Length: 290
Figure 1: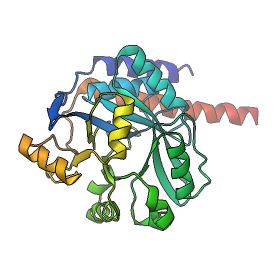
Figure 2: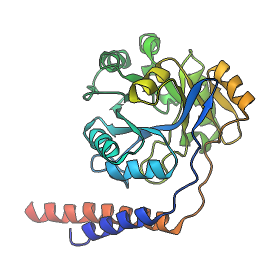
Figure 3: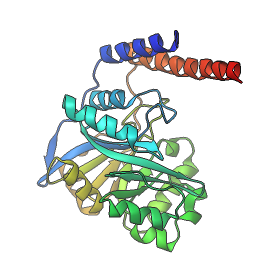
């Protein structure tokens, strides 16, 4: 603790000093307000991540995001903390989310009141998400996850991550994400799946909303009113919205490497060192007790 707490504190200070990234300017296209979002962000203490819930909110704002979903592994507690902090400080719209981690599949749920049991099949999880008024998104649906998304699971699924950092690791992963997305009309989602090695908003979703509220974002997600743009300029999403974007002149691409910022890099390194220190000294304390 003598090492971990100071490191995490210094990481927070360095993060505050880091310069803001040029943000996506709020715009209106075809009568819709277009919001830049990231719907798959992890935080400590329950996930392997270098950011706390409040730090995730601050970093999302620094990255020019107007809406985010905080998605703890099988919990919504950290997301609720992040939403409270964002409302308190005038940050981006925060949707309470969860990444449902189940042996045969992973599923992003956004717009929740409480957690969803991870032991159900996809169709059961989606039904519970909808019962709470939320939206169900297939998380990084690579081929190994496909068997879990049977006809019943696909029937009510709302969206899928077609842009995810894995698509740039291997060209076959990009093909698999696109093939899953093409199985039925789905809301196109671009997400960072942030844990700490990349950055929030690395892949992002442009949401076409009628009103800039949580309700307005959820409605847009249900109605497939999103567009995502990969680093080559290819767009996925509703065809009519893609036409609108083309007439407007395009939207910023995803998957772009950020400009190197010394303070942001220092913040990340200090946070990672603090987390590793906490794990190391935690194990030492446990070994002494045992």
